[in-house]
Image 1 (tube, rainbow, N blue to C red):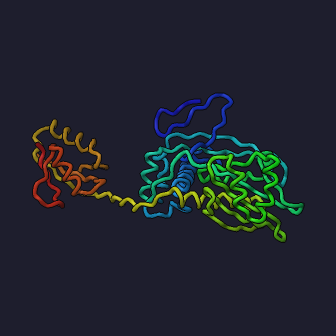
Image 2: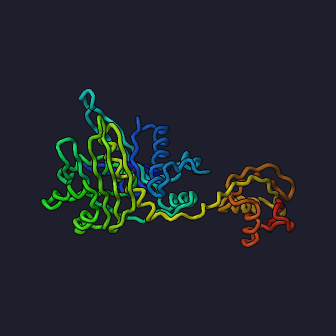
Image 3: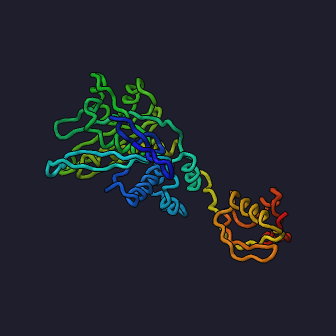
Length: 348
């Protein structure tokens, strides 16, 4: 597999390996094709996934100025890969095929965007609470343990999408007997039995028939203390079971995510700057080189030239006042006048 030499790199995999998202800064997105336009849309959806995991925001793209960054998500991508998935249609039984885009984002760049939203991301690796799920489909409540992991799959997958993991008990005889405690809400008994697992966090769920649908009651325990509680109902048992991951996620966010004042959004300022004192071509080229390398300077467009002076239209990322201050420290160009709004510079 060819690793792209320029732009966003496609990850290299060896024969037989399976691409998958791992960790808080990676995402999986279903796409219709491997075209550039579909890929860029996938990058944006993936960045929303990652920001949701990091910040706990349900719709981070709706935050001021974050939407523009999400639309330009390709700048945040470290590498990407594709996976071809085969399944069976639940309605026709025919084979189905899908393409999944796996995106790995640049952690430092994503963290900077998270700070712009106003959060400090919760730590990694993240805790993996134990899911104690009792299910009654009409034949009496029973424990969903590791051997029955497929029953809890939607909750496990939902937790993974939110950036953490849920574990299941092994299903020993003593653990099977805890179903009664789960059903009557005896959280202390569940917490005591769960001490063999790390961390001391439990998501306790009671899922049962409710008319033609299903209902769930959820309790999240953190070191024996109730840190979250919710109920959910619906016609699809899988979706009702998946709702438990949201209860755990909300509790973990309250525990770990630290809110901070949002980082001020810096507006790019476009100005016309005139530079005088240019006596020859070498000095002109040195000026151009200085501006192109300057971290505060974006786009540079020549506007006019007269003997000994030149005017450029320049995008300043931190504004004119900060650029004048930086120029004063660097000693390559010198602002003419004391006014922070002055656009005249001398080249020495």
